[in-house]
Amino acid sequence: MKITIIGLGLLGGSIGLKLRAQGHEVLGIDAKEAHEQEALRLGLVDEIVSFTEGVKRCDVCFLAIPIHHIEKTLGKVLDLLDSQQVVTDTGSTKESIAQAVKKHPNRARYVAGHPLAGTEFSGPAAAFPSLFEGKKNLLCDIHLSDKEAVETIIRLNEEMGMESVFMESSKHDKHLAYVSHLSHVSSFMLGLTVLDIEQDEQQIFNLAGTGFGSTVRLAKSAPATWAPIFDRNKKHLSDALGEYIEHLVAFKRYIDSGDMEAQKAAMTRANEIKRILK
Amino acid sequence: MKITIIGLGLLGGSIGLKLRAQGHEVLGIDAKEAHEQEALRLGLVDEIVSFTEGVKRCDVCFLAIPIHHIEKTLGKVLDLLDSQQVVTDTGSTKESIAQAVKKHPNRARYVAGHPLAGTEFSGPAAAFPSLFEGKKNLLCDIHLSDKEAVETIIRLNEEMGMESVFMESSKHDKHLAYVSHLSHVSSFMLGLTVLDIEQDEQQIFNLAGTGFGSTVRLAKSAPATWAPIFDRNKKHLSDALGEYIEHLVAFKRYIDSGDMEAQKAAMTRANEIKRILK
Image (cartoon, rainbow over all chains, first blue to last red; front, side, top):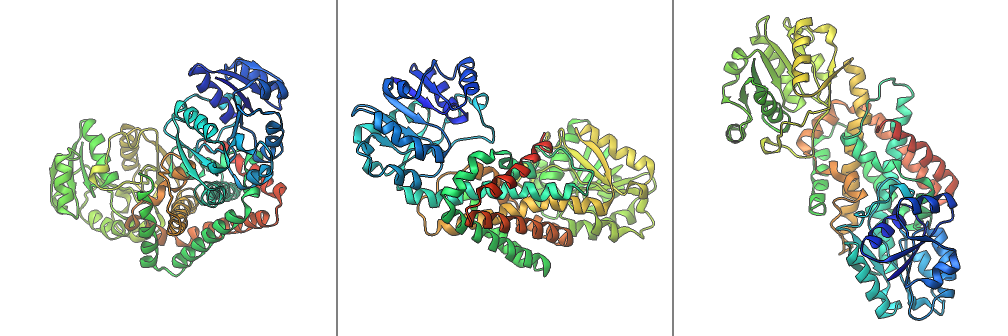
């Protein structure tokens, strides 16, 4: 199969590596020429092409760029596609993208995707072929896509080691606000809090590998990636953040008043998270 | 050397495994008989003994029990020690323990320790010998301890693979509020927030291995361990939590007002955490 990947960063680059290893031909496009050259050198793609050529020549096109760019680019890809070609994406929110193309005559050739995979690193050099192994790709609103287009993406997900999970865009965005975006905000703000105190304290150790290291790991993530995600999901994320802040304020009150029983009760309830982290 | 370990959970058990492997004889004591039997069966200790026998027979005694028990038990250990023996501990806060024994005539035989090591698991079965490898043991107020007692603990730290770091108790507690206790509260409250939403949502995936998985991992920690730590460090932890909440409230405001530039600026500042997570 001929695959075109638009956006050769962590996600796009890893798709390229894996699908090339599976025997597909991979064409690549990136807004930065330096990334294109790096992608070629690292073997993420077979060839660098222009936007029009890449879209015209492929069987399946992946949009692996920030969501505000997906919103602008997806319609242009659909303009060029014929009825055999498919386009999918890796956008971390799905409602705004769905809105952007809902009246496009070729809408049915688009399969909305969101691979639940990533690291705190970005760029072509961060790509690795097993990134998607054992992960899930959340395919949204598949009733709006042609059946064989969906089947093509499910097959490619399998080749990348991903299970396909189906949901509505609106539910996707609410859900992700809680299980992903909130964690990122939480980590970024933890990072800020500790950096503040560090100004007064000489001695901050190397904290990699500690409990702090794992909770703050996401604070290394790229602001340029996350600001648009937070913005596109602002309603749900604001709700999630509001609830999180309420829990923190209550727990601070238990600490201030020395109510260890209330602290234990809250932590015991939180322990149930074990069910979800199998 | 003859080592007595009081408290045969994750920390005490791991100390036992490692020091036995290094050729020391290890005596063990636990408040729960089931833990004592399990520790024997798992080879964490050579022998189970009574409190008085354990303290009398050892060269070095480790207190690896919750801090409120250390506060009560440390004086009793010091009562029994002669001028050749040493006692140390693994308590996660240090000021309240320092207060508890500051007038004890044998105070100089105590070396206050805090190994920066742990997992979200507890009990004898969670112990493993490499727990301390590459970690730090924070030794506090060493000017209050006999020099050769400190040297003995530094040597044992080396045998367990730990670097010894020196600081004042008061500074220790403030520091730990930011780099450890706050992370735990943050994780516990994230867990609660997501569990709340789950009540309305059927579909929560297996989130182990995702960004959420790492930020919420500490929410699996034992409430009985952490409530006393939070309580003993309430002043510093309350300050840290207050600052954290302020950062979250500000960030929520940037999201609500759609101020992506302010979001990016805050995240870019948080990215500096890379310096600390080498």
